[in-house]
Image (cartoon, rainbow, N blue to C red):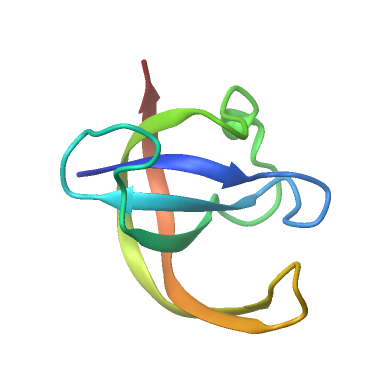
Amino acid sequence: MGYGYVFQFDAITGPCQFLANIGPVNTSSWGYDTTANFLGGSGTCAWLEDLGEGEEFGWWAAGDGIYNYTTAMGGSNAVPQFRIFMWTGW
């Protein structure tokens, strides 16, 4: 289990994928030091509808490689990718 803060979950990421700052312990939104991409599965991801940008969450997931994306400043970034199985908010 890990913890995180969702910073992008929108039309760009799509309904089944989001970017979050994560860490091994529950901390504030600014205390997570690693960025990761999360996949919610293929097809429908209705179970993720209650999770949104700006929320902290706990997660259970499996590693799923590396995710490469273009940043808002036009650069590129490579982050770990996880396939999320369950999340909990607070």
